[in-house]
Image (cartoon, one colour):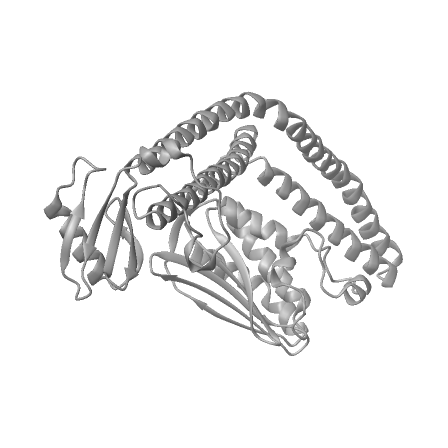
Length: 407
């Protein structure tokens, strides 16, 4: 239990830290990229407006608000080249004085690509370009962004390294502190389970005495409605005590003893034990049990799972209704399905049926001596999970409920 809670605490804590670091990293790098793009736009505006001479800076194109000019030294250290085209689109000349690793022929190729794209601005490889049109033709300006891209790449790498290092440091602290965090929780849970176990065992003896005294009084004075009421309530309390003890044992996550069990035969035997009770209430019991299904499981808990499902169906199936139990193999899985007619489909989420002490129709169940306490289905799900399966419920129709256990 301690190991499981520590693992969950570490997982969720580090998941939150991971999300935080990712958000911070994306925010920092995104803001840096935005600033980089704005700076590149200002440099390109300066380059285009000055025709590559930096002797003047006119207003920015497209009617945008004027921006402060970049530092003059930054502009003079920029690497760029320009290509001149005549009004017919033919390359006339190129100026590659401000860049060392692009010759005139390469500049012509870049210009042809830029013009053929049909865009007035864009990127080609590591160069940003912009086309300036005049009556004499077109000028294509190319600005080398290699240095800026390297800066952004370095920033991303550094931020990633810092984030990874921070993540590992936080992980170390979380691991060291997780024991102190979960210890009070474990202590509280252990006290709760111990209380339930002790209370359950303490209730067994007085319930047995009450039952024996009630049986003795019925023999001496004869059976009457008071004896029957006492017997009914003692049975309910005994079932509740048994379910609480089962839940407490399952919460301990102890390893279950497994054996080869013919669950088809077991289901058939349990089904027969409910036939007489169903006949009294005019409830039809049907089955579709595939014979010879043998699995490795805990016989006691699997029996209790079947009994809880059948007992729940017997209590809440209306007079004249039907109960159907199916057990079959499909796609490598074992399916246990219990289906019965019920009152009108409730508006609540079917998952609430598995909440401890939840009962759908409180007004009816509280006045019905045969109803349970709302713990049975919760125990059934815990048993199913302890046996390596899953238990869910669906409403195929408004007056039909189905519980499906998959192993």
